[in-house]
Length: 292
Image (cartoon, rainbow, N blue to C red; front, side):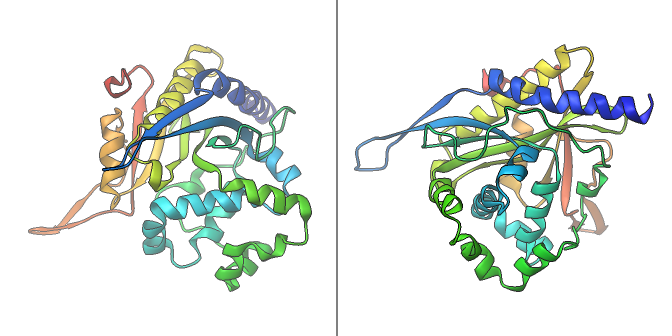
């Protein structure tokens, strides 16, 4: 396959993913929370789908991505600080801006908060190796470097206050309670869906919201596998080795250590050294009993 054909196939696939997500992810997730001695609180989360390239065009201040890094901070920020340092959010923001990702997010707002994915976009065909285990992303862009100079200013998004539309969007971003992002790519000659992020805000963890997200993602993998021209073989993700809760959750959903994943290494009797992350793989035809 020549490079032009490969690029065309990648573009077709990227434009197909939002359609697949629309079919596989529930339009609403209903959450009933009951605390000891208190009445039950019902929350409805509404599904929205966006694509990174489209967001970049219509959100020059990256408000949407900025808020998602805050959600990530709430869930696994501790692990990022341990491995990537104080300015990990700047690095993460650059990743999210650069990669051709499909975002499925759930909000307490019915109306779209980010930006729609109605127009077709060109996907980048650059190598995805940069996201692999242990890779520390360099702060190459001046804008991102400026964020790193003052994390407080970065966190507060003060630069956007003079933009009325940005302020309106920022006001609505706090209604995002869960999201995931994924992409179609190739690893070790296998075409797969790569689960880039999956997060649920702490107050809604334990109410099966994550299961609903995973069910939609695995359904998307299966649907892509049924489309013969895509030849999707399964799904891939990385997880911090110290994040034992998430690691066990992925194992329950059928993921296993990939053949090329780093492993724990016994450096001397009784002393085990863990890698920064594990790479987990799940074949497409596996039945997930946790989702039945």
